[in-house]
Length: 88
Image (cartoon, rainbow, N blue to C red; front, side, top):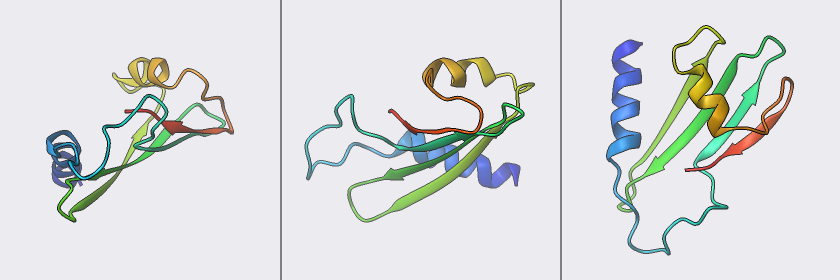
């Protein structure tokens, strides 16, 4: 599982911007996030390399996770029981 997570993270970080479409703007999304009643955040993200390769990854952040507050700051409108689009 950890190896798959590392591979998915590498794919998301390494995919270059597609050149056959305009650059992303502030309103674009790279996926969706939801928050459970206990505050756990689940993000489902997608990366594309512009040549047909697509990578999907799901990340789960419990309130005890070291990066939890960083994710909360990136998704300020996310509330328990709700979902939001994830900006780049």
